[in-house]
Amino acid sequence: MTARHLTIAAAILAVAAPLAHAQGLPSWKTVGDWEIKVDENAGNGCLMEKTFDNGILLQFGLLPLRDGGFFAAYNEGWTFIEEGKTAPVKFHFDGIEFNGESEGYISGPWLGGFVFTNNPELVYDFAKKTEMTVTAGDNAPVTLSLDGTLAGVEELINCQASQS
Image (cartoon, rainbow, N blue to C red; front, side):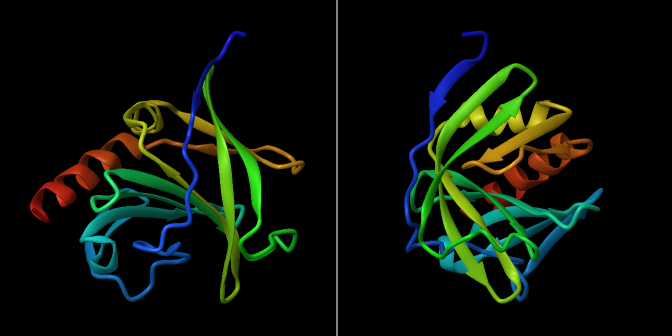
């Protein structure tokens, strides 16, 4: 194998329900295209979100009550998503691949998947790479630019540090 494989633990996060379009959450700061928010229901966990030109809403956040974090991706056109159904998901960052399961979630017009991780390497790879390709189940891979993500993750960490 050319890619390093690490397992991502999947979970239904009762503590922090998937946050499709985290409207109503207090805004911490905007960094480039990323909006940083605080979710009181997740133990004051901070999250960052960005909507891409292709309609994908990508979220990454910290879950202090679970000692981990999450990735979530949503799109109004993903009609193949079934609430609560799990599907394999791969995150590929320039030669590094993480495998896990995504939990299907629907919130209003947003359909997507939610993945819990307690692997800190995923956070750093997300922050330092220039693009990420996500493959969920049998669906076509989606590649997203991560330009500006390092600054967003740095502010996410600042946000979380201030919540203690």
